[in-house]
Length: 484
Ligand SMILES: [Zn+2]
Image 1: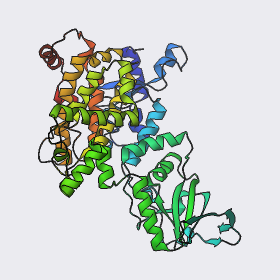
Image 2 (image 1 turned 90 degrees about the vertical axis):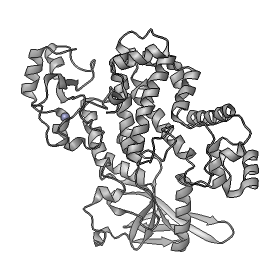
Image 3 (image 1 turned 180 degrees about the vertical axis):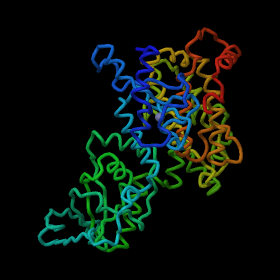
Image 4 (image 1 turned 90 degrees about the horizontal axis):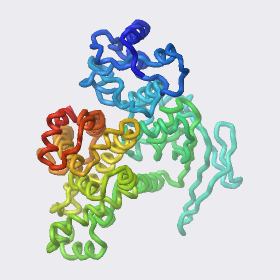
């Protein structure tokens, strides 16, 4: 329902500030200074969940910053920006209240790499954080803070080594970042999603920590712990507390477990097999023949480029299917198999890499991760929104899809080059080092602009690429429009 200009005026008088900015307490929350057409009247509750009187309908639509060139709340710099689009990213997934909560989480996420960042008012030397544990193997119990817990005992191999642990819940303030078992800082996009999930779901796998110097150090579960605190503040968090027989040995095991559990490192062979589309025998031969110089290009010498292309695309598609099932979902919505292949070949590198598998220049693993991000974002911002904007289905038509992705990927290549500080624009924008949060936020903005573009709201009968290119340009679907 669109408000009349009198109704809008009345709402503006009642609500002189953007509801999101005001709730988050950021500066420049007032709507004054924005032209009428740059203010949206956003549904606080979705239509259908409010009473039917005209007064109810009006009261449910709250004014919000919506400058088309403004920064969205999920983009870096929004909280200080003077030109904003506070509606960007909301889609139809959130009520106004939920959008406020989600943006609040994302703003905190942006400043969070480790759980310690969320509890910066603690002093680690303060004896209030002392945790005494007595491990009584004879009785099979541990005592901590006056309570007794059954011990879990693991014997490892034939060495006689014994590992003790028990499970409980604890206030997060008793948990500290483990500086000796280095873990990677949080991935912000993943963290925001996990925190949102934990607002209404339990944490199933506990945080793992070790007990040393009367403190509990988290050696596995930084993401989960950060997300838990963001979602539930000081609620008690499920933990498993370990006591190793020898601290050094303990750290060794913990570090190794962490690396392989979080898949941060792959052995050369495993990595090449998983990501290169070589089969086991080809890889063994290449290693025998070339040792550390082994590469895709050497292993595939003699294979026709079209065969190489097929194999790489096949491997990538298979792995993306396994991770997100996007291809089949999109197919049901109208993306044909040739269009999927077009998508892969637009963003991935489908020729053999000459850099050896062991080299830092070998980027198949990063390529896969970047492609997963791309699929996920297209899925959320385009395919999940087709019900509410059915006209965007026109962009899935084979040739329109191809030409639109051509523009999108050209612009994305520049964004990746600038933000990852690459020497050249990458010919395949996914075959680069791992995209950072900023690149991902620009991809998301680009897909939103794709969805909102006027290009799909006019006739899309044209079916040759030259005409389609001209129409896309005439309707403003340009590189500069997609990701400004
Ligand atoms: Zn605002």
